[in-house]
Structures are given as structure tokens and as C-alpha cells.
Image (cartoon, rainbow, N blue to C red; front, top):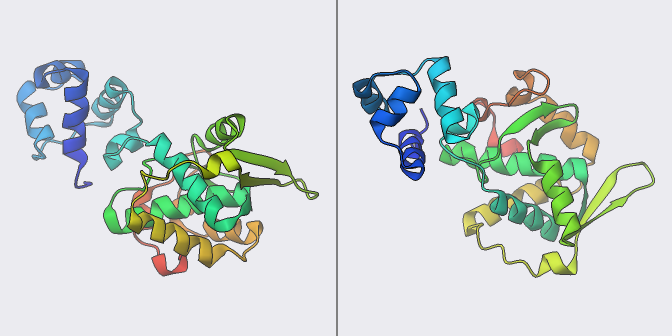
Length: 225
């Protein structure tokens, strides 16, 4: 189990203003069993109980399992960080670079950089909120999205986006992002897409299913950056 999992569950319960007895009742488990579970004891939740717990806290099962909820503002800063290093990048390639950053960070820290979950899509793993966040940033004038002759969408940072402070990304995360950008800078979009298709998280997920962070620990991070 992820090292901060039980602490994460306790923090969610506390934020909701619920007691351990309250949660136990809502997921149909005894109070003593829930207390043991929250302390990291031998009690394991059934799929039904885990689903009820995730619904209670308003998160997905994957987010509960990884012990991390999405940090949308940090994810936006990750987008800008790649654009500042890359200059301009296609929409599809940018989605893959973000996947590399989150999953590579998880490899060493058992926690993703942004907390986003990713799904198996036609062109590789994509985070659930990627397209809506890209559109939001474009509407705010932080990035520009321009069509290329081949039909691809080219994303660039605007002057407004360049003024945004990337304060939520620490130095080690910035270094990882730069290394990933350097590794894939001269690779075409289809090359990076083909590469993600051959990775375990993508291969073992069904269409539109969540790809597993845990499976990425069996990959070789040296191939990413």
C-alpha cells in the first residue's frame, strides 16, 4: 500500500468533519474494524466498501489507492513548464510529456507529481482533465492553440502565461521536467505515442480504463529521461 495512504484517508475524513464511527456506519463496517483499517492494520476493505468510501470523500478509487487527490493548479504549472522548455508542442505530445512527468515521479516517490489519473486513450495515456484544462488555459489567454497544416494542434505559451509563477513545482520536479523535455525534444508525436503504447500501464488497461501507476514501477525510467 502507498506509504501515505492511511494518512490521506484520515485527512479526508477530518476535512469532512466525520468521526471514525460515522465513516464505519456509512461503509457498513464495524467501528473497531474501521479504526484498525485507518491505522494500517490487517483489516482490508472489500471493493464495495472501498467504493462507498471513495464516494463519501468525492474521489475515485484510483485516487484513494494512490493516496493523492489531483492538484489542478500544479498540473497547469507543469504544462507551462514544458512549454517554457519546449517552446511549442503538439497537443498530443504535450499530454504524453505530462504522463512521463507524473509516472516518472511516482517511480521514485510513490506519489505522482500532480495527483492526476490517466486513462488509456487511442493516442496513449491522457489525464482525465487534460482537455478541459487546456481549453481553460486557452480561454484565459495563458496558452495559444493553433492548427498545423497536418491537422495537429500546436500549443504555445503566451506572454500572459509566461508571467505565471511556477511556485508549486519544486527544483527536483523542474529538473525532471527539463530532462524529459530534452530526451523527447526531437522526437515526433507519433514516436512518443508508439512508445507509450508499449509500456505496461497502457498495455494492461482496457480502452478508456485508468492506467496503473503501480505497473510503471516495472518500467525502466532511463528510457523516459
